[in-house]
Length: 221
Image 1 (cartoon, rainbow, N blue to C red):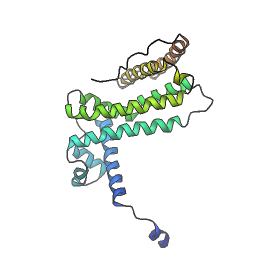
Image 2: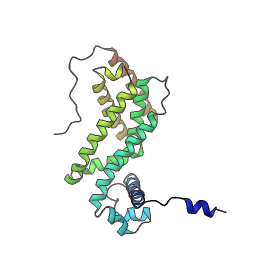
Image 3: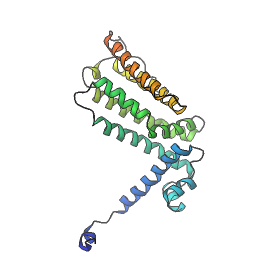
Image 4: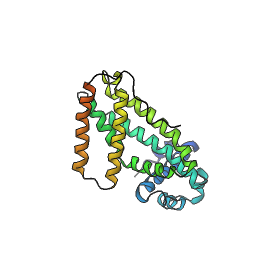
């Protein structure tokens, strides 16, 4: 039987904490909806069914579907960053740092969080409001990820002038591979591409440093 004294001594959550919990529930459900049924079916009604919250509660936090989707953009970026940090903390100190970082990037880009975000990317092509919300969040994600890549690569790779370009190529290649995964690419094929790319990176890093770093292909005008 619960101790009534212990129950009464438990601090009550503040209004801000309750609000944050409700908001997180709404956004987690929105992300799950994007992943499972796609953007078109991610409606306020669907999120309401998943959360069990009153429609008015959801609309108090996100008055429109557009605002709900914009909130999901930031939420998914935060989730990807936190997951990457958590996975990076588990790297064996004696592991090959280059291989470990490639594995981290691949884990991120083949995760359910990434596939949910991809639904928003595709929609942003023809939705200017969503695109306007997505671009700064993607810039924040890339800037944070670049810092974490360098931290986990360590010297001498982190300060090698070739590293920025090679990491960008890694992200681009594995993003494409992840999209093929959505179409049913075999696990053996995916593993082979990742393994071959690691070998290619060893060769590229062993070459002479470029005089000028390659341009940032992820910048937008």
